[in-house]
Amino acid sequence: MKSCLEEALRQELSEHLGFGRYERQPGRAKGSRSGYFKRRVTTDHGEIPDLRVPKLRSGNKEREWKILTRYQRCLGYLLDALLYLYVLGLSLRDLQEALTILFGPVLSVSAINQVTLQVQSKMNRWQQQPLSQTPPIILVDGVWVKILYSTPATWVDRAGHTRQERRVQERVILAAWAVWPEGHYHLLHYEVAQAEDEQSWQAFWQHLLERGLQAKAVKLVVSDGTKGLLAAMKLYLPQAKLQRCTVHKVRGFERYLTYSTLPEVDPVTNQPLSEAQAKRLRQTQIAMEAHDIFKAPTRTQAQQRLKKFNEKWQALEPKAVKNFNHGLKRCFEFYHFEPALQPLIHSTNLLERFFREFVGVSEMLHLPGSCFEVDWLIRPSFREGFDLQDMFDPYSFFREFRAKSDEIGSFPNEDSCLTIFYLVMVRDHAKHQRFSFAKT
Image (cartoon, rainbow, N blue to C red; front, top):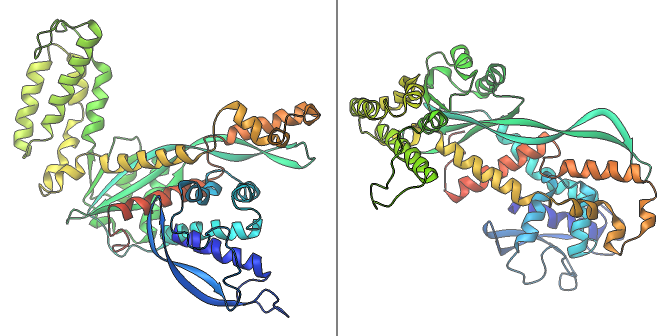
C-alpha cells in the first residue's frame, strides 16, 4: 500500500510538471522537484508512519494534490480499494475513469500503469528469490479461481474496435506453507496450475527445487489427500512423509453416514428431536469424537481412542467407520514431531484460513455482479440518462455485455490473480508480524 501510494504521488507530480524524474526540460515553468517530506497517513489496512511525499523547489503552498490533499491524514476504504482495482479486473482506462470521477483528471493511463506495475514487480522478485533455508515441514493445498483467457475468436465492439474474445476458465492456485521447528510459519511458494494432478505437483516441486529447496531437508508434507501429490513426492521428495489432513479425513466420512437408529430425544435437554435435528446431532457427535482422536497427546493414546470410536460407531454407521479407517495411518505422522508443533501440522488449517482470506478479499473487491450494474458499466448514456440510440447495434451491445459479465467474479489474467494472492500474503504476514522474508 505504501509503495503504491508513493508511486501514485510521484506520477501525479510528473503529470503536473510535464516531465518525469531525471528529465531535463527547458523553461520549467511549473518548477522542479526538491526531494520528499514525510507524512503519517492512516488507511484501512493500517498506519503508514513515514509516507514519502514529493515536493517542489517552489510553489508547494499553491500546489494542490488530488490523491492526498493538504493536511489529510486518513485515507478511506474507497481510495485503498482503488489501488487493487486494476489487478482485480479494471483496465487501465477503467481505473483512470474511476480516479477521474473521484479526484478529477489526476493520472494518465501510462502513469496508472506505472503504479500498478510496482506491485507486480515486487511479487515477481519474491517468487524468484532463492530460498536460503529449507523448512522441515510444508503444508500444501490448492484454491480454485476463475480466470479470463483469450481465445482465437475476435469480435467488433460498438466503437468499431476489434476485440479478442475471452472466456472464463477454472484454475487452481497451488500453495506451500512453511512451518519451522520454532513454531513460525509463512507462505513459501505459490503458482497457478490447471489441476491438482500429478503433473501439476511435479512442476510445483520442480520450481521449489530450482529456488533452492533442499529435498532431503523436508521431513513432512501435510495435504488434504489430493490425487497425484504422493506420486510427485516420491519423485522429488523421496524421504519426506505424507501427513493426511485430519480435518479433511473427518469431513470425508460424513457423506457415508446412513443415520440408522437415530436418537428420539436430546441426551442433554431430554427434549424430543425431529428427524433433521437427530441427523444433525448424529453428525456432530461422530465428528467430535473423531476429532478427539487426534487431540490425544501421544500416538498410543490416539490408537486407544480410535479403538473405542470403532467399537461405539461400527454397528450404527458401518460405512462411515470403514471409510474413516481406510488409509488412516497417514493421519498419525504428525506424532513424530514435537508436541508444540502438532496442533499446527496435523491439518492444513493454517493454509485453509489464508485461502479464506484470499477468497474474501477477491469477492469483496470484484466489480458488482447484477446484470443491471453490468449494463450500466458498458452503457455510457446511462450515466447521463437513458438514450435508445445507444442501442443502435444490439448484436455488438450484447457481445460487450456478455464479455463484461464474464469479467465479473473472475480475474482478467493470471498475473492479476497471483498479484492479489501476493498482496493478501503481505497483509496477512504483517498483521501477524511474521518473519516471512527472514528465511527466504
